[in-house]
Length: 194
Ligand SMILES: [Zn+2]
Image: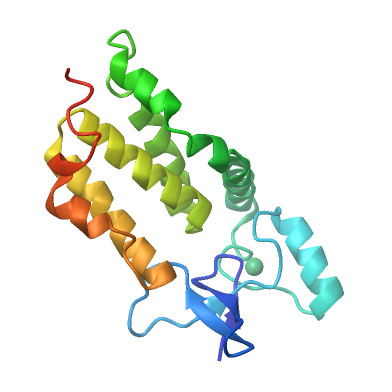
């Protein structure tokens, strides 16, 4: 039994082998957590979500995000807008060239990339929308930057987050646990320091 939410902890996933929908978690779940999925585009502002849900499914969404007081809801709308913009940028953010440029340019500050990544991940966490296109990009970038700076603990921390989320999302860690064990073995290790 799944429930509606505009900050869902799961999504429907079409499984071709069994020709059926399966429910897939989008973040780490607590054992007693109720499974929720969304019935509309969760990056739309509340008013538009309400209109669509009313029109298509004839119900008024009372999820925690929709139940926010107006001022808080406006901030939530703004965060969702920023996250949507970030999803559009995902492809360009996967391009490593700017990272390598930063690594080889001492004129750019050490926290140049980190500040931006932390800001976006902060918005994601505050809104509770764990979007793959966002966390996968920024966990990887922050891990690479930490490696480039030779910061072992930070690199392991980001790799661990990526491993957990990849496992929740795909059932496999995507190789991230190897980075957790040995960040020094990545091609990014120490390249900012050379
Ligand atoms: Zn809602």
